[in-house]
Structure formats: C-alpha cells, structure tokens
Length: 359
Ligand code: GLY
Image (cartoon, rainbow, N blue to C red; front, top):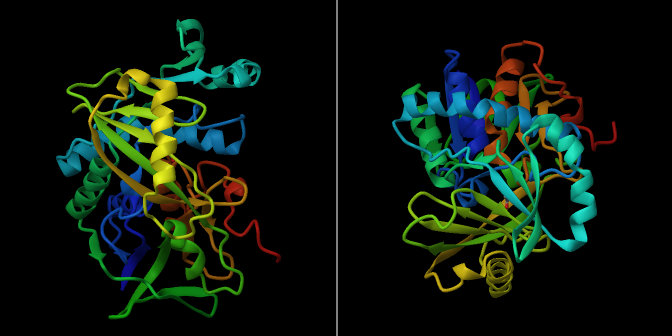
C-alpha cells in the first residue's frame, strides 16, 4: 500500500509528490496523459502575485506567500533534478491604460503593503504614459519547471505512471481506500486529487467539484536575444521574454471552449493585437508556434485546497486557475501539513474545497 497516491502529473501534483517524498512517504503519481500535459505545459511561467491580483484578499496573500517561498524551493529543485527551470525574479512592468489609471493608482496602497518598492512611473514610454514597476515578481520557464519537478520527484523515489487514467477514487466507511485505473486497483492511505480542470468529475459525490476549464491560448515569437529583461504585463495580455530570445505572448481566456484545447484563428488575432498594442516593434519577429491549455477555474477565483469531508485521507488540491506554477510550493506545503496531521500554517477556510456544496 502506498502512503499517498497523487492524481494528476501537472505542477501541483508533481510539486506535492516531490515535497511528500522528502518527508519519507511512499508516493505514486498517476495521470491519463503525459507530464504536465495540460495547463502546466502551456503556462507562460509568470510569477506575478501582485500583477495577477485585483485586491488584497486571501487569494493574494496565498499567492504572495508562495512567491516568497520560490527562491529556496528552486535551489532545492535544482539540487534534486539538475535541471535549470530559468527562475528569473527580475520584476514585472505593468503598463497602465487610460481607462484603468484611477483604479490602478489607488491600488498602490495594498500593493506596497507586500512590496514597498512598487513604483508608479509616469512617461516611461510614449505609448504608455503610466506604468507600475514591481521589482519582486518574475517568471520561470513552464516546460522546464515541469521537467525539473518530475525529475526531482523521481530522484526522491516517486513512482510516476503516465498514460494511466484514474477512473474512480475508492472510499469505504468514511475513509479513502485508493484509486482504480483501467489496469489496476491501487491501495493508498491518502489520495491527493490534483487533476486540474478534470478534478470535478472524480469525486465520489453526487455534486461534482465546480472546476471549469478556461482555455488559454499563447504564441511565441523568436528574437535573437531577450528584447527586454523582464515580463511586461498589459490590460489584455503579457509578453514574457525567455533567456534564449523566445518571447511568449499570452493569453486568451476562452470561457466557451469546454475541454477543447485547440488554437483558433480568433486566438491568434487577439494575441497579435496584444503585441501590436504593447510592443509593436516585436511584430516583425518570426512566429515560433502557438499552443493552448485548459486552466482550472473556480466560481470565486480561489483554489480548492483541503480535506474532503466524509472521506478521511482524501485531499483536494485543484482549481488554481491562472496561478498553478506560482502556487505549487505553498500547495505542496499545505497538503504535506494535512497529510502529516499538522495544523496548516495558513488559514485554509477561504480555500475549503466543499464551500460551494449544499450541506
Ligand atoms: N498566468 C497567466 C495565464 O494564465 O495566462
């Protein structure tokens, strides 16, 4: 019997497995597809706890705390994986459009509570008369981060089984017993459900988890070197320059695509517009491909992290929407605390997975 079966080999599942294996637990990770095959692989890798937030709520505090854990997390990851995930804490510039100026200027107060060095810039660029400079945000390279987590987990003895879908989470007498796949039944003391946009269907419940797919399309341009040293965010998208000159342009939010993860011409048109408005000098760069992923969204925008009532040993870690990479260290830590029977180091009430259910 495994100590823990993790359902989902995206960044949340892999980070959790790596963390748990470091506490000497035996861990298996199962996924229907390849490593990080969905939103984890599609991610542009933005680590933007403030730029991705609208107010100072529990979600922002969770993002910030996870962001603060990143430097130490990446050091350990490099050691265990020998893969460099291109962690770049080089700051994020937020271009401010005229229509958002008043709102964003008045948000400086709560932003500076986290990061007193956040600056309001005037006349930084003729196309963008105002901008916010936030020096303690950054980025990582999504596919390398997935590879590093998987390698680090394997180094710690995690058994990763790809192409093996979990069909059912078994629960008996109020306690999780394991999972069934088309090939086998795996017994486990704990099951962590980290299946992203697919988490909704897997619960042994009449009411599924309200996790919905929101497609994000992105494209890449290829420069010979990074055109700027940091991520630039705007009202309709972002530009994330990678070390080798790739510039990731993201991302659409397609609420009506269901589980269709294909790129559309409308998506390419919207992303071309992001480049035209934010940084038109990039338009002549060669096109280097386009892709899409399905973000796991929840009705209130907050992830689902915590034990599942009525099934001791079953823990939900899903619904991280636009911030799965950023939230992976803190989610792994919180799940680890729950599995070890420790009091969570952060108030989990705003993230209770059953908060939408009528009970
Ligand atoms: N975090 C960026 C995105 O989801 O597009």
